[in-house]
Amino acid sequence: MAEFLQFTFSGLTVGAIYALVALGFTLIYNASDVINFAQGEFVMLGGMVTVFAAAAGIPLPLAALLAIAVAVTVGMLLHRLAIEPARGATAVTLIIITIGASILLRGLAATFFDKNFHSLPPLIRSEPWMVGGAALLPQSVVVLIGTAVIVAALWSFLTRTMTGKAMLATASNRLAARLVGINTSAIVGLSFMVSAAIGAIGGILAAPITLTNYDVGTLLALKAFAAAMLGGMGNPLGAVAGGLLLGLLEAFGAGYLSSQYKDAIAFIVILFVLFVRPQGLFGKIGVERV
Amino acid sequence: MLAVENLTSRYGRIEVLHGVSFNVNAGEIVTLVGANGAGKTTLLRAISGVQPISSGFIHFAGENIEIAPAHTRVTRGIAQVPEGRQIFAPLSVEDNLRLGAYARSDGDISTDLDGVYATFPLLFEKRRNQAGALSGGQQQMLAIGRALMARPKLMLLDEPSMGLAPILVDQIFAIIADFKQRGLTVLLVEQNAYAALAIADRGYVMETGRITMDGTGEALLHDDRVRSAFLGL
Ligand SMILES: Nc1ncnc2c1ncn2[C@@H]1O[C@H](COP(=O)(O)OP(=O)(O)O)[C@@H](O)[C@H]1O
Ligand SMILES: [Mg+2]
Image (cartoon, rainbow over all chains, first blue to last red; front, side, top):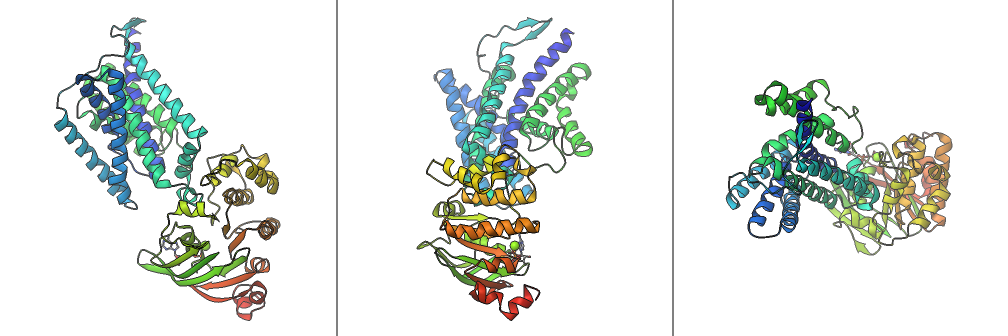
């Protein structure tokens, strides 16, 4: 029982980060049909910029804000310089562009920062609480609450503001969105910026637990992609559920089978979805993207 | 109000508009008829700025707009009811209408909402429903209402009667005829040439990417070539 709880705690914590990255995937995919494999680099930037800004003497909250601002700027530039000029290119071309961007960002991070692993101090305290014999890290709770707050904030942005509705409209019918006077390329740019902010916040929240380095984005992007597919590509709530589920699968797989298989689970999930349920767990076949 | 000059447009290497020229005066209803594939939809999309053009000019309200981005053309006063309705299916009926006013800078859209609901009482009843759940005729009314929300000077309508039951077709044409009373200028594309020419001040006939005939609605209705080609008479 203690073991089960322990795996659940760690699975949900990692899963929450997958969920945030998968949510970022979904936002960009819905607005532009682009699968952004540089999504993990936003998480990396969140953690790494915070670490290095804090080391330079900037107070932690400001360092975190700076990191979010850097990620948002990178997201904007990625759209402006790489995605927008390639408008009308095939999906494969766009994927290759985002993979190229992610390699570039990783290289820049390795050069500007370093290749070591870094950590951040946890937001509240570092000694775990004991729950049913299992250790629950306070920072895990912070990650989960932070994720819930981001999901709720995004939800009210999309459903309560005109800009959010314009984003949904662009996702649902780009031609009609342009015909009602929505500047759809600005909306796609905004989706890159919002995704970058979400990823960066995830990276900052996770850094005290999972450590961060220039290369954390690579595997994270693949896993979040698996999570987004598991939940049904294009479905924001599916992305969150898929992220949490993948985190749990990994934690239980590593705990009860062998930790060797942990990273393989995401790929098994991708294969499972492709062969058994291409629309994902929560997607309907041929459903309108939201 | 609208003058199109020598407009050409292509899909890849295939040119589908070969130098189209025509004009619409303020306060008119102008109908554009033509067989399937003549290029009517391409022309309306080019006017709205969502279809690239390769040469030619589009003057609207005293300005050249052929290079203006699509969203700024809505701000200038051009709204379109596109072919196939193109509503925002997952959004509510009311959100669809509100998005119709997206390009407007004046905040007060509640009067316009009331106006659309007065014209289409059914939309008021279903304002909280998902737009995708509406019937075809209701979706067409939503698409028209959404375009009205932009408070346009010029309304482009692309086959608004397509696929509708006859009783709804009459209703839609009555509503379009009524736009004139509200001071709206209308460019109407239709395959239902008889009804469309009947409410039109003037009309143009389009064949394979060219304007081949023009005249008053009345004259075209009685033209032998139009009658045999489009009216099946
Ligand atoms: N997306 C497209 N790609 C390639 N050709 C197209 C496309 N849309 C329309 N066409 C072609 O352009 C011509 C004009 O089409 P369209 O403007 O839709 O005509 P209409 O609205 O009068 O039926 C047709 O020959 C059609 O096949
Ligand atoms: Mg057409």
